[in-house]
Image 1 (spheres, rainbow, N blue to C red):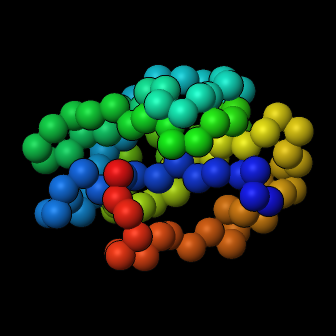
Image 2 (cartoon, rainbow, N blue to C red; image 1 turned 135 degrees about the vertical axis):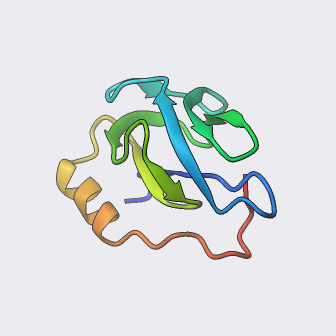
Length: 105
């Protein structure tokens, strides 16, 4: 399942604890490349675009516009076009958010 990559609410500052999805800029099925802007997130201080840190196809959107979620919440899935739905379901079911000491975006 290494070709499945998470899209998460990034942490953009020391005090950021949550973000609100403003809008997804792409739809499920869209090919994504590293650095491509894929959604906008509002925080209490700014609205910013989230850029893809991996390439693939946006296969799932787990949370939509208007939802406010804690940082590092899984909100979408990037994967190869040939990755099975069962593999994506298993990835989501076994998702563990990155620890606090892992690099933030």
